[in-house]
Length: 108
DNA sequence: GAATTGACGTTCT
DNA sequence: AAGAACGCCAATT
Image 1 (cartoon, rainbow, N blue to C red):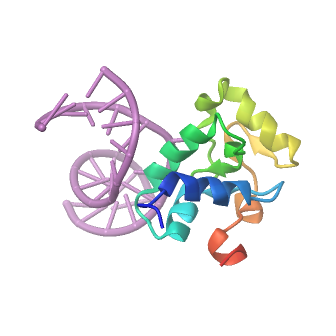
Image 2: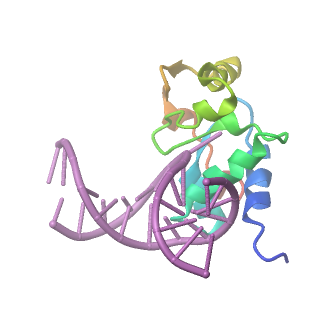
């Protein structure tokens, strides 16, 4: 095993997120066993922007598009989510619980 | 090398 | 109930 490729693990999980689904930083962090370091997930995704990682499917615990500003343009993230059939109001995902994809439940 | 910040979340006050 | 503080760990300055 590597010396904790936290980032790479995050990429794996995010890439496994089905279309029309979303997850939260904490969920990924907990799945990786690094609960509490949800911030690192954000950092990881920051690097994922230049990769093939659909980071727009990852939001904070309340379904708020906190990282929209990192997509180059604030509306980019919202547009991407809506393209997948997810209803987004301002910066908040509607029925977040319904779209929530928990790796601990789906993958575990 | 120390201090600060950051796409969060939990817990204490 | 609402607000403030802390913890996580890496990257940037």
